[in-house]
Length: 149
Image (cartoon, rainbow, N blue to C red; front, side, top):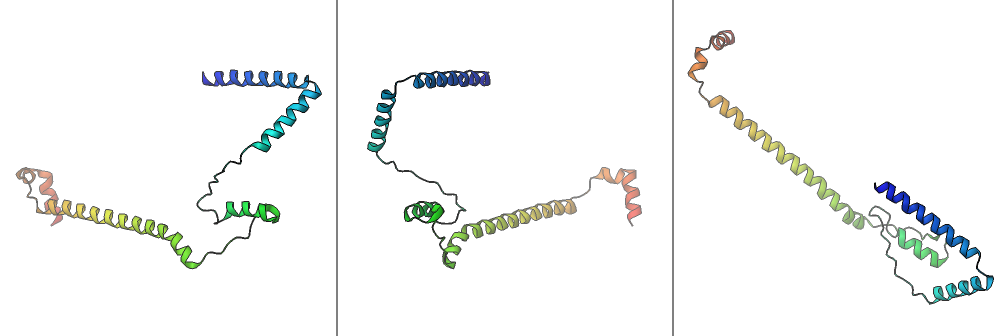
């Protein structure tokens, strides 16, 4: 249902665009010149907007800023020279990864200790449990006991 609705909307937009293109082509040259001049005036009066650029976390530092700075400095391609990081800055950037790995090792160790304790509890319960009297009355159990000795 939604794809049919989307197809109808796209068809309507195409028809509207075609109609506007046809009517714009039939405008006199003086009207198109006045519209072009009004557009240039409006663009000249338009205030500059702040544009926020989201830089991926693993991108080299200053990649987006360098592109903007390079465009104003005239460097070809609009890229500034990459900065080198000090070893201390690299360590500061790497500590979350170290903490994450240490946390994963701690979780694995804790789970292994917990599993070992659970198995030890089960083994202790089995070894300290008295056999019921019916086990000694079972002929198969007696045969098992005689074979194991």
